[in-house]
Length: 112
Image 1 (cartoon, rainbow, N blue to C red):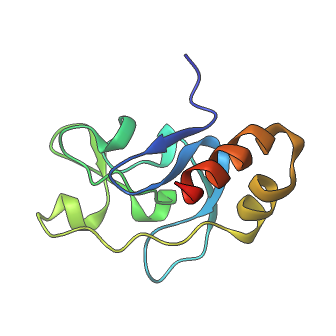
Image 2: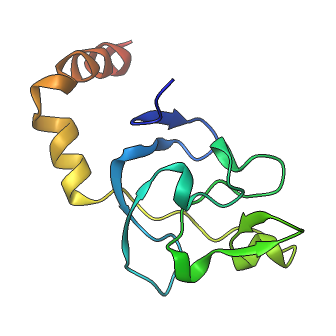
């Protein structure tokens, strides 16, 4: 099973190594992707310990033996707010032929 593109119901956004993004730390704009290498918790959706947001290497640390966590989770605090999708990703989803079926499904969902 690949993690190129998936959807996180908790954060209501696309995730996976195929999704360009920026670090979710409020003071950082490092370009990353939303793959497992950048997820707080080190597992899909953050696993049992992480918030499931995505951070550059500067804003992930190893806590609790081997979990890669953001500073908020590593210190038992509430997660940062998520950052919005990049313009690059929005443009891709709204124009690329590979997303045509998704666009049609969204029209149907909005109409109902």
